[in-house]
Structures are given as structure tokens and as C-alpha cells.
Amino acid sequence: MVMQVPDPLTPDASAADMKRCFDLVIFDCDGVLVDSEVLSCQCLVELLRRHDVALDLENAYTQFLGRSGVAIVDHYTGLGRSLPADFGAELQASIRGSFARSLRAIPNVETLLRGLDIAYCLASSSDLERIDFSLALTGLHGLFEGRMFSADMVPEGKPAPDLFLYAAARMGARPERTLVIEDSVSGVQAAKAAGMRVWGFIGGSHYRLRNGRALLTAAGSDRVFERMVDFGQGSADGGHDSIQR
Image 1 (cartoon, rainbow, N blue to C red):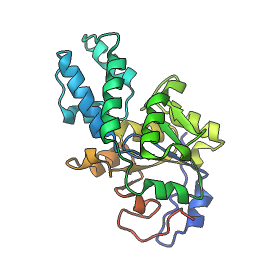
Image 2: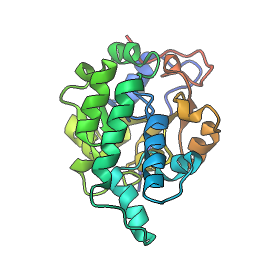
Image 3: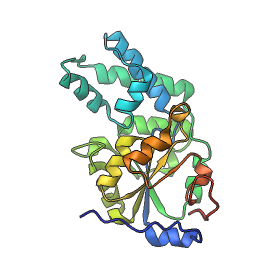
Image 4: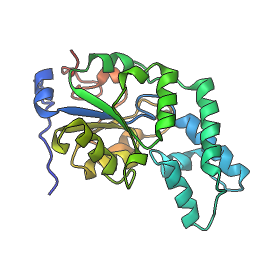
């Protein structure tokens, strides 16, 4: 049976209440730490088009947000649409160029990370090379040195729970005392399958014209928020204490 901790954010909750319930916060990378989802999905759509595979941006979000490159190739292979052997390398090169030109950190995330009084780490469907590149471009790399975990490290990526369970184990935290911050349906599902609390983040530009709150709530998010300054509050517009120093 999956265990869940009680929600610490009652109206009179404090930072100490948060610390009593959570020993670890796991952040997704794309769409949570860096505003990358529109850039990477645009690259995917354009590259697939060059290989005569039709996919619009909205369906790219719906089908592949939070999924690894391997999962994308497997998806089309399962549909009988084999992609070139170097498709993954092509995609990564395209994304890398787009990131170098346009990638930005999510507003206020660095301030949040520097103030956290709970252990934290990163767990992403991206490979470590892309994670390193993204964090270096946005000035966040030093905040995650030695605590970056990739889907390449586990048998199954999101929505399977493997990655979050692996990250928590490496950080010495029990699943029921771990909080995950995710922007994708597959990531929320993975966190819930791992027996963790999960808060959906909808502050990335890929949610500007989409109802991210409804999507992530339906996927199982315990809370949904859209600004990093609201992290640790009882609601996106609440007034409760955060888990910052």
C-alpha cells in the first residue's frame, strides 16, 4: 500500500511544519528550473517534420512533455514509423543550439533554491549532458553539484516511479517524506506511483495558453502553483509560511 504524509499546509502551518513532514524536495529540470519546454518541443516538431512525421506543438506537449528521447523514438517505432538511428543525436544538437540562443531560468528559482532549509536534488528525463548544459547556461549548475539524477540511471523513466525512488534513495530520504515539484503529467504520475507528495508547477511558458492547473490536478498533483515565490504556501495566492530560511 502506498503511504502518504498528511498535508502540512493547514492555515496555521509554518516552515517548521514543512520540515516535520519532508526531508527532501526533488525538482524536475525542464519546465521547473529552466523554461525549456517550448524550445525543446519546437525542435522536436521541426525535426519530425523533416523526417515526414506530422506533429503539432500542442500534441508534442500532450504526448511527450516530461518524456525522454528514447521514449519518443520508442513511441514512433511502436506505430511503425521508424526514425533514423541518429534521430536522438539530431534532436539533441537542435535543442542545444536553441538553448544556447534562448534558454532562461524560471524566474525566482535561484532565490528559492538558495533559501531552502530542506535537502533538495534534481531528477530529470533529460540525459546528464543536457542537464549540465541547461544548468550551466542559466547559472544554476553549482546549486546541484553531486545531486543530479537522470532517467538514464534507471530501468524505466517517467511515468514509472524508478527515477524518483532512485533519487530519494541516493539522497537518503524515504518516499513518504519526499516532495516532488513537477510540470508534466508523466512526472506527476511518476511521483504519485513512488508514494511521494507532488506539487505541479505551471509557471513555464508552455502553460501560457494551456490549462495546466486542470491537467496536473487531474494527474494527481496535491497542489498546483505558478510562481516560485509561492513555493511552500498553502495555495498559489495563499499567505502561509514558505520553507525558506
